[in-house]
Length: 323
Ligand code: ADP
Image (cartoon, rainbow, N blue to C red; front, side, top):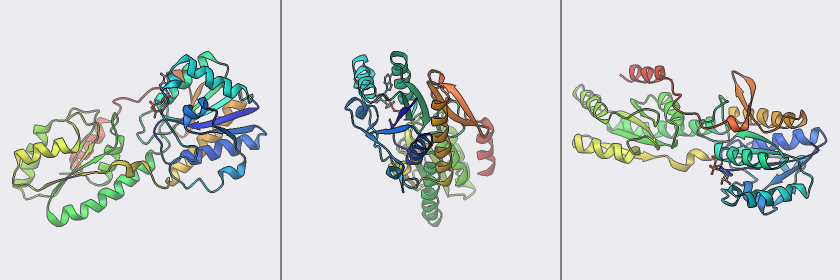
């Protein structure tokens, strides 16, 4: 490769900027021409493509969001759309593409690389940590730390008023944010999509705690919990325990933003550097992850969502430590 491009796609996550910076600076270090594509595949189709020098990524490593912006793009799902995308790259002789996004973005890259001679490299940019082939995804550590800080604050009120608090964190398909932030804040219960929610057992345990005057209870719920999120859980608790004071807090998008943590900046820098190394070494259509502190390269078509891998032992620890 001699000319490469980088884009961010799907949901944004803190640390994407650090990854863009690493791709741009590593590419320039090796004498490649590096281009940035605005708004993911949408900008690629619309030819929204710019040369990036080292200065264009100055002072962004600490910023959340993505300077390249991100979007979802229906047209890229069609062969005609992807042909347009290819033509725009070809016109500039770009033959390597780094895609920072989630598994949806990788599906798009797989289709694209089957049809056209463009080497695609995928980096996991998602707060959900639910991508196979990597122990870390760019943004998870920041999101989970934001959740912990917010829950700690709510806990003060919870404790002062002897209340049950049901706090909903992000995670439509994955419970990692709920599990990690729940353990770190001493939650009594953690409800995640990977496990069936036994609402009866939950109510029974709250009633038992009420009998022994333990009135403060923190329940952390992932938005994709099969019972239907924090509001549903609160509805049942209020119905069954009308005397209890139960409150709901939905943390929402604060979890997606903010300055990336040191860990997210570190893994984004490392992954971005290795994405360019891959292109230089002639690797094509691979996902770059980190496992057991080593780089892990997986064919892009084999990378999907990580499912149901939450360790049972953690749930036992939650139970023991919250009693
Ligand atoms: P994420 O990357 O965060 O999982 P999406 O699932 O929205 O986010 O995917 C991002 C974009 O990737 C989509 O808007 C679309 O342009 C592209 N994409 C996703 N799946 C496919 C597919 N099967 N074929 C082609 N493009 C796809």
